[in-house]
Length: 310
Image (tube, rainbow, N blue to C red; front, top):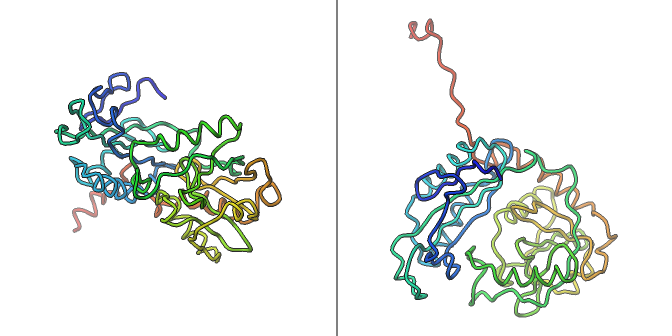
């Protein structure tokens, strides 16, 4: 990251080296806060308003006040990109509970904190080919919907970190997590899809998943491609015997899973449905209607002659 990069912090743009929050912030002490990971492609922020809407949903579940209106958050994201002259970037939008005492009680925190980090990416476009990944079904279960629910995109990612540590020990790229019942839930930071007998399957809300913004768009994309999309409980057996498996998410985009627990998925290579979905997704993220433009487009002014005539 550029050492001269600017970070949005509570209404101000400060150099990266000066972007600091208190050690008494409950976001740091207790993971008490919410965030969104967002991507900008070629001058447009992909599904920005949808990400901001989810931020407010997560904050609402935590009774966490955001001291800005949604349109102000949108503009702050765009301004941060403009300040850093970025047209393609990864964006981290964070709201913490703010400074309080050492008690876990959120009532001791008076003012929440908003900050936005933007980081350049190598290319405005996604690569020609999707990432090819190996995975393991981790022993770490996804927290239940009545516990530290991952339907809330909070700063508490310890559940996912434990799963990633296990994947690291297994020397694979990512973990796949089961829910408390033993059904397939999701990856550590991504949603999962299976292709079986021409249908596209994905776990539903009962599996404790994050309702991914990219996941929702991929489901629509698959239906537009005339695939039947089914949200259902998925067993490990169905996962291990799937024709194809792929992840979706802000950072992974659409990535092909070709190995689970050392066993090849389908042919062990990128499958035709994943290929088609990825190719369409790769084109889709660059379409203006899919995002919010970063830089304002000035309308051409009428000529002086025309102005006089009117």
